[in-house]
Amino acid sequence: MKAVVVHGAMDLRIDQIQARTPESGEVLINISYGGICGSDLHYWQHGRNGSFEVTEPLVLGHEVVGTVAALGSEVTGYCVGQSVAIHPATPCPQPGAAPQGLHLVPGGTYLGSASTTPHTQGGLAQQLVVQADQLRKLPDGLGLRRAALAEPLAIALHGVSRLGEQVSGARCFVSGAGPIGLLAAAVLKIRGAAYVAIADLQPRALEIAKQLGIDATLNVGAGEKPETMGFDIGVEAAGVMPSLQTVLDAVRRAGSVLQLGILPRDPGSIALSEIGLRELTVYGSQRFETELDEALELLVAHPQLEQVISHVFDLDRALQAFEMAADSAQSSKVLIQLA
Image (cartoon, rainbow, N blue to C red; front, side, top):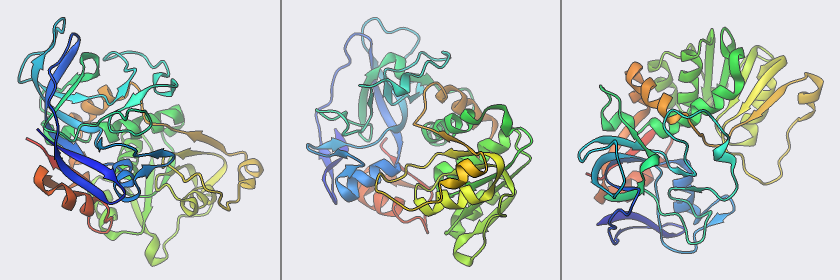
């Protein structure tokens, strides 16, 4: 079968890899769509994602959905042809389970990651074998294309959930209108925020924000800035230090900051003194745990979220898909159609 495989920096190939038969407790999935994430772009462009370096061929992709192709022994509750989303992590919570912090357990794996040796192969392949507890049935009314947003939406949900009840009625500012920032802004509105503003350098991204019903957009490239200390909550979703400084400046005294973007580990200059001087509360956020179930329900209830998908490429055009995903002026969430 075909798969999207990175061999090193700027070395992305469509390779033939060996298909696998599901063993006891496993399910074989025909993958329909896979989204390209920022981590996938890092593996392609740099041969690494943070400290995780590609040392062997790695099938990319963790934002994948598809249909059941075959069931291993002892698997119940699923049937061939059923549409499913895939939780990319192990250990994986049971569907509908209460949060236990499993996503922070050392030694866990994530689809399409070089954090393990051998690497954990990803889902941008025509077929994928996963554990049955990684599957989530798609709700009625949710097609596979829109369902491909479930994983990034779950990341946004996890981050916003860390803020708790303070979101209701709050004035919120989001810095960064990439797919995660757009989805976080939408989740803030869904969770009852009174006002949400979002800032970005790219006019196209801000147009999508308007389509999602975000209250205000700020074009940083045109010199537009958020009101200083005018917001109850600030969300950093761009993953760069100047963006975090903008968020810190925008939040009022005793306000809250959510760090949702993945910041570089390299030292940088930022006025962290403001955290103490204004008694800001800072929340970190790492991936997600149980939020995939809620994400699927929200995608049914809020079909406008599909506006975040900007492009869909066939598998044979995977390199063009990655090039488009890397161009934030033209794209938002880019999908690869595998079946």
